[in-house]
Length: 219
Image (cartoon, rainbow, N blue to C red; front, side):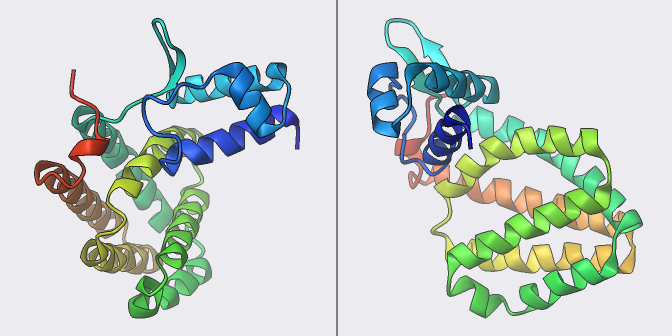
């Protein structure tokens, strides 16, 4: 892996996982030394992160990790609804049932999944990948992946809500069932319900103060 790619992957993961919190200054000299790369590949990595919307220039401070506000969350979910509902409908029309039958079996054992949340998030990642492949729409998937970069950060905000994770597992199972059955309308509707509930969970968490310290003020 090239040095710039390595720096990009590391910094992106740290931002998404909130190890580099919003407002953190990414000074070139400090970050290059920390990551063991020269400043040229680091600049390339920072440029890519800026294009992703994870880093921005701030007057008097240089490049900093961007914040996440309630307005950002709502807008991201608006885009996610449009993209994922269409992707789900296409996946139901074009799927390989065997792929989704494997996911179905895993999702049915939600108790085992939720005993290890990292395993659950791994399954969700495989679910997303299977849906993307089945949809067979490269431009749609490219747009969806851009949105997912930011959604991954938001997901970390509420990942300790085990009740919500159990509900989400059931919702994913309903989507998979619809895809296996080739029911495009139900797959899209189940996706709509899942995303609506996910958004409401995050907004509720913010309104009750659980996430208040981690969200940026809305402009």
